[in-house]
Amino acid sequence: MKEKKEKLSLKKHKLPTMQEKILDSFCINHTGKMKGMSSVSTCCLENPLCIRNQSTPGSICQHCYAKTMQEMYKDLKNKDVANIELYTKTLIDAKDIPDVNSQWFRFESFGDIFNRTHLENYMRIAEKNPKTNFALFTKNYGVAMEYFKENKCPKNVTLVISSMFLNKPMNIEPFYKTGAFEEGQCKCFTVYDYDYLKKHKEVNINCGSRSCLGCKLCYDRSSDKAPGWGVREVNEILKSDQSKAEGILIVRDSKKVDEIFNNILDLEED
Ligand code: SF4
Ligand code: SF4
Image 1 (cartoon, rainbow, N blue to C red):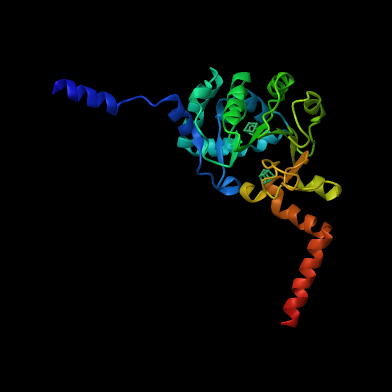
Image 2: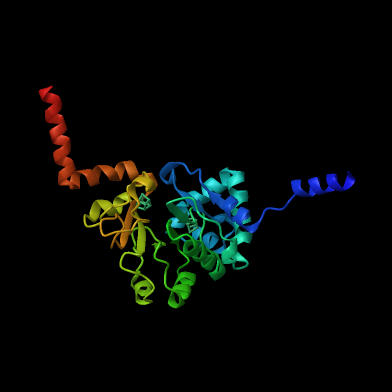
């Protein structure tokens, strides 16, 4: 009887397997633009690169949304801190990688890659889940370059090189020169502010910032009709400038202007 009780209590306190830990590390309840997407992240408050970037004058990291969220929500921060241990210290065995039950998945929505082990673990997850479309967003250019000089990017991954400075797209040519990427598989993501957009009509704002699930530009290269096929540049308006800047973009878009006029005419006829 005593033995049975001990066995039962051992069962009750059974430690989670590696697969369970990885599944628990995923975030499936995003709000805002990531609503409906899945992701896995580490904590930007503990990432030396993020800390340095956040104090670099003029960097986009000075407007870091992830920092605000992780300072505000303790549970989110704790989960992302635990993920540092899980992903950055040792390589995960293929047998321990679970099936990802999601079609669209982002690597790092609240932080950045710490080191090569971290990046390699993400690539292992992608390789084990060829039906899921992954996007890895990073400003850790050095680690990404070192890794992709030696490894092809899995077909179901888009590498999104996030530009460090407002209004200044990174040169992603060196990534293509590694030979690791198909056309459009490496993209440059840049944030622009109102003042710059006012003067530079040529900037094509193609990130709607409303819903990644509805847009998929950073994720879907599945056919030549897919939104992300062949696209190398993704441009977004700085969040705090969005309502101001959207006005000037509408005025520049002749189709939208026609639409507005037609709506006004329809209203007048009614
Ligand atoms: S790299 Fe991303 S998560 Fe890190 S500080 Fe910059 S914006 Fe924030
Ligand atoms: S371009 Fe589309 S998929 Fe990429 S971040 Fe913007 S809304 Fe999301």
